[in-house]
Image (cartoon, rainbow, N blue to C red; front, side, top):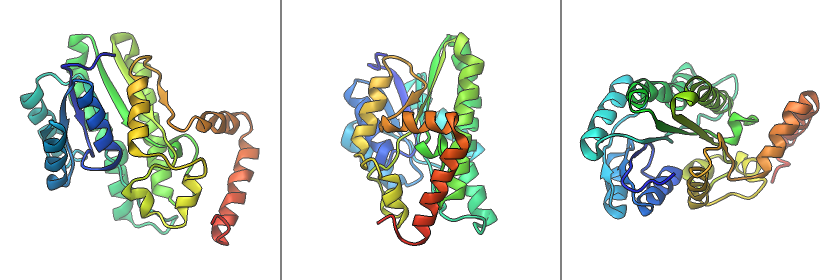
Length: 259
């Protein structure tokens, strides 16, 4: 897909993977809107890479509407939406209702709210592209972080539904599912960092480059860590065996054996 002169929005682009995605799309000639709830970060990235800053909370209904409206005013039609913003709320059954609500809002409902605003216009135009930054956790699971695991599964499920429902009408949907990436989220994940970095933690720019390459073939699953494909296949082919393996990792996590 040629992105030159395309209107592209990247949420959660003040740092990490979102910043790298925005940078890569600008380098490809796109007209990019940088969104982040951290207004200073959004403005700094936009100024640095030559994009348009539209700070705000893309997860709420009002915030999504404001972002779409402002983005259209900045770059015209929105051709590609990178729903990249995401949060982690580590823990298990003890995680609070407030943290569950926040994870659901940002990691799942933000995608639904954006799509409601984008898809009708894309159907009229005959095309558009929605790219979800999910996680390998959305294909497998994430020990030690129940809300993240559940909501990233939800993000992948939403992307699957969107693709299955609208692919024949020109809407391309993709899900980026990396393992460990060198971001603030990974740095703050404590003992979980070793688990998600098992196959080497990538730089955000590596993930952005994988996403860039995937624009050419419209593949649904974008796997910056190619090993995830075999894990995903193994999970489906032998679920009980896979769960026993994950439980073994859980026991190692509890005893500090992950390093």
